[in-house]
Length: 171
Image 1: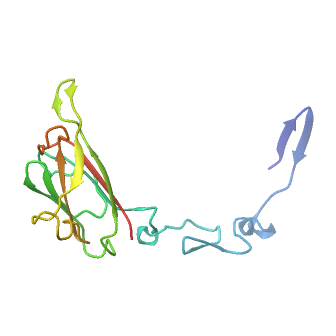
Image 2: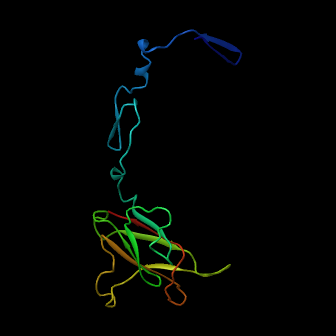
Image 3: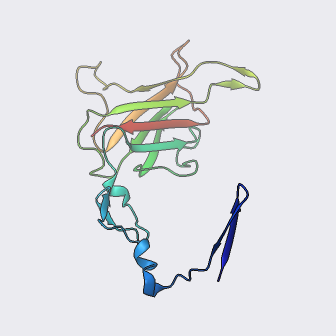
């Protein structure tokens, strides 16, 4: 089928008929296949990058967003978090499947919804709960669990925040 292209006052008529006999399918295939995150790609089809092949300290190893008043309810989805346990007001244990974290040298970041009613709100803080003997043993931070508290930094009281988000980065 003829194709007519006009641009800047010049008209070009192309009467070439492209078929598989004159190399159209080979135009899709790369001369040299490339590897994308460990998966070979030659341009002839889609590829799927397995989530387990994405790694590094710059990628979150786990994350969760949960309702602090009812932590068994994970809001939406989570990644590499098997459950959240409520221990007491503002005191939660985040549980990870075995093998997600290589060691306890991971970094924890998070935020929680401020406490208050209506437009009246205040600050809230998230911390890793120290051991029960005054801090002389390691924090309650292992490769399968992380115990945190959410509290009011002004008076030290722990609170059940309606929304708690935690992210874990590390090995």
